[in-house]
Length: 115
Length: 115
Image (cartoon, rainbow over all chains, first blue to last red; front, side):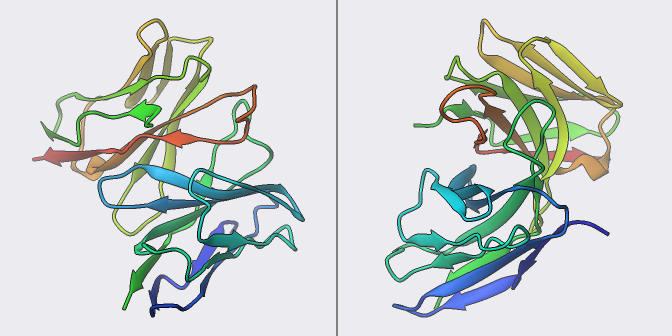
């Protein structure tokens, strides 16, 4: 049963701590994305990767880092430089670089809160 | 700068009636539009899309209309059902150009369908 798995579902971060959110997909998709959702806000793009070992900054990349060492995995690290990390984080993938008839498939999200 | 706008944060409709969700965009380069549905604490799921070469696309109870001259699209749900109660996000993309591979989301509209 193919899909996108995000873990953990809930995560707490202490001040000054880095935390890593996991995202794994078994859809054989080339492209993967990280979005952030804040209450009353749309989804904002943090980072995206169109292929293994390559990734691009989105609109709000400051304070975040990613890696794409494997096609299936695209972990997101929220660093201590991110001053307002509390949000709902969504990982997504698409078969290829986004084009006609393409659509994003989303994971179920990780809620990150600061202690 | 919000390039995709959903100006109604909420909409309440009686079961069986039509729901109309609206979306406006400012970037004239956008040529592919999607609607996503999201339940609390879950990832968005794809509903329906439309490319700029069309002005209407229909899938069961869901129809999306695109008015390119007005930079406006709308999602019609007929008949509305209680299970349709969710947040609906409008999203847009360029199929060509420097932002290929990126989706821009509106802030969402909370639809509530009451019996």
